[in-house]
Length: 171
Image 1 (spheres, helix red, strand yellow):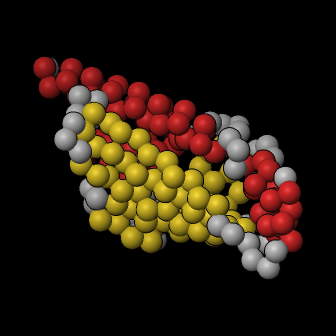
Image 2 (image 1 turned 30 degrees about the horizontal axis):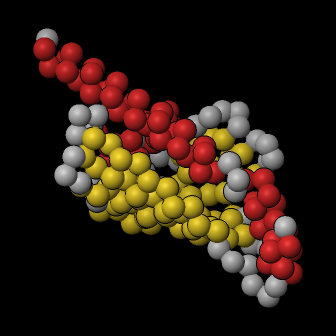
Image 3 (image 1 turned 135 degrees about the vertical axis):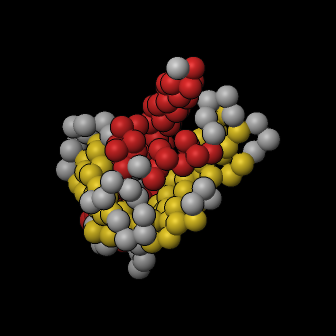
């Protein structure tokens, strides 16, 4: 708490980093299906949203350069915007954040021997000290556990889609 107060009253507002990632094995999904879970905004919302607590809305059906999504948190109430600024299909998506929180994330799809690693390091900072304190106290602590849980939903969606594709290919 003392460290937090020192940061709060210091001259600069430091960034907050969240190094998250998830590994999907070759048996669970291929690269194309994995990338679609980010690129297709309906699929993204299906695994990410946990309404009414945390959810995203998008302005386009695909997350491409120039499209944006709005993150909403109900408790405590908070929101900020994410805009896609760069895409290399099958390799990465880069997004920037604006609003009360600013920052960036580059979601990389890294082929591994047995599957694909999605590296998702998020870095944000607040527009002022009060927002920083609010984010630090209320939204930062549950972030990593929330993402681990939502990545488990992503994995379930990928496995389910693979099973559906197998059934359709048998017909």
